[in-house]
Image: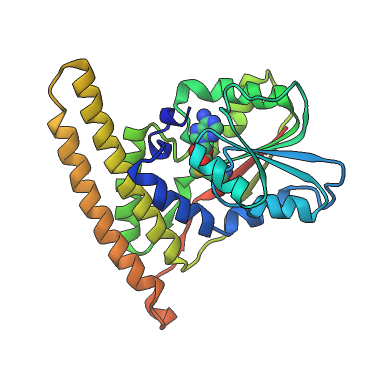
Length: 279
Ligand SMILES: C[S@@+](CC[C@H](N)C(=O)[O-])C[C@H]1O[C@@H](n2cnc3c(N)ncnc32)[C@H](O)[C@@H]1O
């Protein structure tokens, strides 16, 4: 289940920083709030790959609906239960729900993290279970800044994502993939961007998650080499180690910028788009 996605391995190095980062992010909730109906009375919303943040559940209850969180990672599912949300452990490619049993399925930043060969199956499964679906992914194509450290960070994060099988531009492909998978079904598309902004604390969180992900990738390589009885790929480990150092340095500069009182000294950046596809 979550072992398919290197970032979300149970008990791994990345989990703690990812939990912190995902719990602190506010903008994705604002996007979801805009996409969801204002009145959710008599409606049940399933949040697939819900992560640790309890706030979508609160919003759904506030609007009169019922909320069910699902995550393949037991730590995430438990955090949702602890916050009064209903939660189940499950896999987006084999959902434990009957056909069309959820009024709305909400799947944010999950498909882009799945290995490529599982994405079509996940979309079919969401279509099977949800009367309506909202899928959101990031698109990093326009993630830019006049600050060279941001550009350096983006280039190195792209390399890590490549190793991890994460598609940082998946938002740009989402509409086409849903249409291809569901044979020309009509989809709605909305693109959200909050930039240009100076909110460097979100980038600090990202550098920490990237460092955790690199440790996971290094451990996965060592484990695989052991299982396959081959030497570890030293070139890969060396490159990952180098990126880890770059991430640390980017993180330090972002942390300084996050607390800089003089706004004129803080260059803006345009964060990734959030692309939402509804069907
Ligand atoms: C980037 S986080 C997004 C969390 C949340 N949707 C949000 O927007 O804050 C991705 C989440 O998907 C979960 N996940 C990864 N693979 C999954 C799978 N195959 N089935 C269900 N959940 C999965 C991870 O454990 C993680 O909680």
